[in-house]
Length: 603
Image 1 (cartoon, one colour):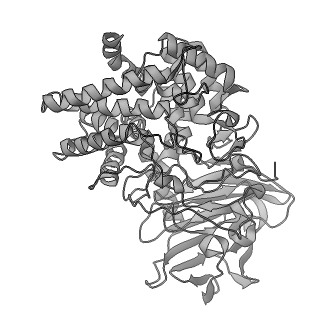
Image 2: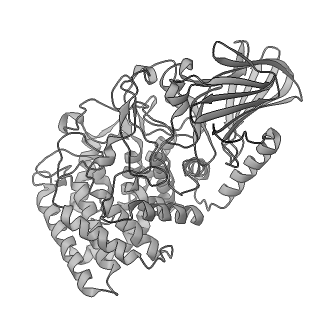
Image 3: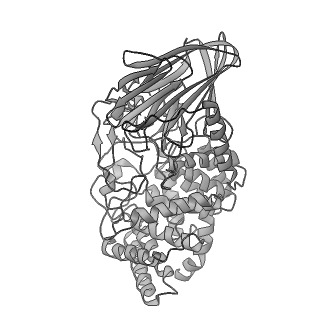
């Protein structure tokens, strides 16, 4: 493990992009103006020469602690030096005229000499800007379409392609340093008042989380996870990115390095239900509207992922000039999974439409047509092998979870048209039964009586834990009980669930990785449905303890350190959902109760 760790970072954001701030006071990752824009600080995947902004005491003899300012995304780092104490507040005001990064240094005790060291490197750490000094404390930097204005309360020096400011804060001093991005052809934005921006940003997040309905004994963890999810929402469109980072490794030194700055429909139903249950109706509606727009158009062709604005073109490429986090290469931007066939996405979108209508969100007269188009397209595709939920880059397979989500799509479509078009409803119901019969004939291991990862195999994958969560099978069904027991034996290591065993699945990569945090929460959800509440609670507590000191979770964990992109929306969504399920008000229990009569009728 390198000196840097993924869990060493904190998150700040403005609802359109986000930055990662290290324990050492360095902003090592920032893409402007949007989550999926090129980074101007890319030291996360290289060194400070690839762009970063460090603000800390000028001398190394200091200690630091950090926290969020209450229920906000304002990150506070408390520095204790031999000569005094200073507090740095880092935040991004909610987007107004332009995206801003604001850093405020407040003197608390004595006096502390501070150093701001800023290296701007556009195009993922590759391009140095041209610099124009407007005043001793105001500098303009331009590179192609991008421009950045540095507007500080202290003088700025520029040498060796770095902007530096050295200054001393005494008790009571407040020094603001503001970085503003704008299009290079546009006029220079107005100056931001750091103190006013601080008050407005604090008020925004407090009011936002104040709308949330949080129940049960795990309120603090749920609240921080909801704030993190709120930071991952692209406010103009309602789309939620999987993570604000790219190419953070799933194994240190390995090649499982992917770009997650995009929006995946695959978890849209649980996202919708969790937001509604939390009382965040505005965000649920915005997410649903984004999903409708993204998948709309003819011919219907649901992609596994989209850009935050719903765009479909996502080309994967490698940045050879970046050495990667802890030497993990290649460094990838874009994501070729956008072109994969992932059948589960169709079922997920239909399910989301269905649940939205059931809860009064879906009121659009065009939805009948959209459900029909999706279900009819799924009828053409469902018999094909695909990449599966885990976006395998190996040979296509008939993944059992993917087929289950095909069943979900047809079953929900049948219920959608029950009153308006009974003929169509019967046709979709017949398709659902055909898919179900095939799954039970080909997707169950006859010897172990467990569900399997793919037809004709005996291997397992953690996606099978979702079968009772989507209503395909009762959690207490003997086949599901046997499947959970097999997953506990074969995929549960160190108390955490792995997605699958690489030696059993040709995923096109073939190397190990950490445990998948979300899948571990899914196991807790199934425990709840099986009545194993003490085990579910113990597992939840173990998983909640994996967060870093700021309450943030990556995609994976190896038992000692976080791995993968960070913070990961699915990990935080899964924490919220499991906490709700433990409190008896979550999506899994509600959907299981709704599905119980239908499952009983079929069994």
